[in-house]
Image (cartoon, rainbow, N blue to C red; front, side):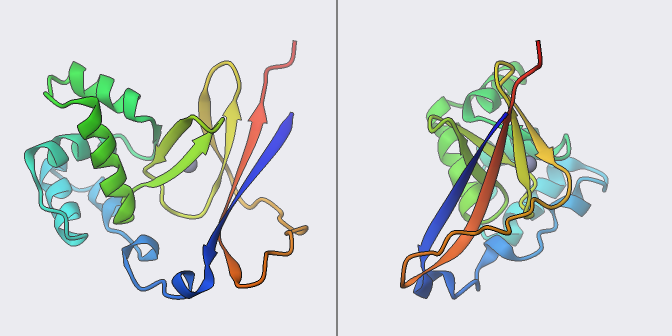
Amino acid sequence: MSATTVIHFDRSAKAATPDASPSRELPSRDHQRTGCPFHDVRSMLRDVGLRPTRQRLALGWLLFQKGDRHITAEMLHDEASKARVPVSLATVYNTLHQFTEVGLLREFAVDGSKTYFDTNVHEHHHYFVEGDNEVLDIPGEVNMAEMPQVPAGYEVARVDVIVRLRRKD
Ligand SMILES: [Zn+2]
């Protein structure tokens, strides 16, 4: 088992203003438990200032109807095709990035090339199962006692820990 720690640095001036949407409590979790999901995606989008276009509604519904999950653009594009939602992979990418910018999703990379989007935007870390390409949440805290000294003028914006697992023979 090996662990990869990805630390994002942000200029402190920018990171010092956590005003906007990303960190604020989002209504999505409650919305999943209430009635019509399509209606709830519409109000989720409104709450974060995104116009509820047909494509955003359809992709939002596919994303958020199943509880917390980790998904790549390709996986969501597949689901959209199966649900007969006519949408290009490029649009899926754009929509996922828009949702991430307003704090509805959290983005993290595995292996540099694979980008996953997480519907759980709260602070947590991940296991990545090699071979299965499966991403799982690590329950509870990860002890980061030995944090590196960050360069002058920077502060830690976020720490993503990805613990890579492989099955024992
Ligand atoms: Zn997660």
